[in-house]
Image 1: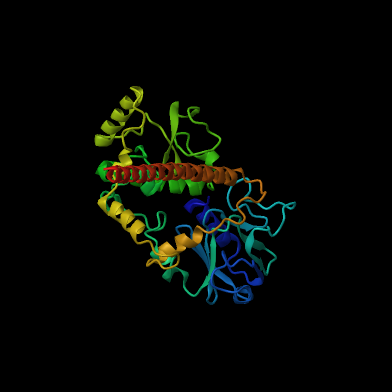
Image 2: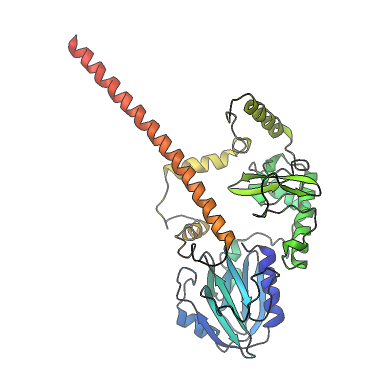
Length: 386
């Protein structure tokens, strides 16, 4: 999945290879799910003859400024990627286009040829990306709704503390990153020193990732990052064991020796482990769920009682989430991408677990309902007999 370093690497590659060049040919895919709000003919006509002036990024969004509007904008989603023929955009094994590769790829959503013969393409296998043609991409959603960019507009340590210290959800769920902080630790329970360390780590990780072209093999040996090649109980960093847990629906790698729960959560975790050893199973509630704020709980209850039909939500972000949860038409295509397949299996496992829980609940409700009806019938029979 592309993150900030990968999108920034794509922006820099375009900046280094494409600026000042005129677009002589443009091909847009016939895919209205990805190509949003504009026809193929209009999109292609708006690009041909234009010169690329600059490349910009915020978060996981990239847009090209041409010599006149409108401008193409790319929201990378889960599998969006920029490929430039003859240029290795990142140091990933599939980032460079070989002479034997299909070009442009069957997953190409936008293909451009420049006046010097250079060609580049934006591809998206799983169709969660969005490609738009906008007069001013930075002034409209989704870019206008983003917070400060971690690289271009970094928050100070104090700003980070003020922004997150009142949140009661797990820090992993909130940030999907840690700095010697247990991934299940409630954000509200972290000290200012913790936030200072987190702020420093965010900056270091982004800068180093960009320096090595997002190539994880060149990350420092003391960095912890999730890799499917590592198996639980068999992965180590600097001689310390890495454990794997699920937080916020995501597989999470952490070092128990360095990243420890603190305060009440540590006490609850200890009690939970003690109960397990005594054979009580998972009777103790998950401490992260207990730490959920009243606001989140109320929001959940309200959404269950008065959920609106799809497309009638009040917030534009909700609409986008609804759109992005559409069917994954190309999710099972036979490209050599093991990571995608593993993600699909993980998602399917989660769905199966949910179905089992739902079926068990329905079964219990049905049994209870039958017992109630039977009791009522027996009561009526006794009254008639009297």
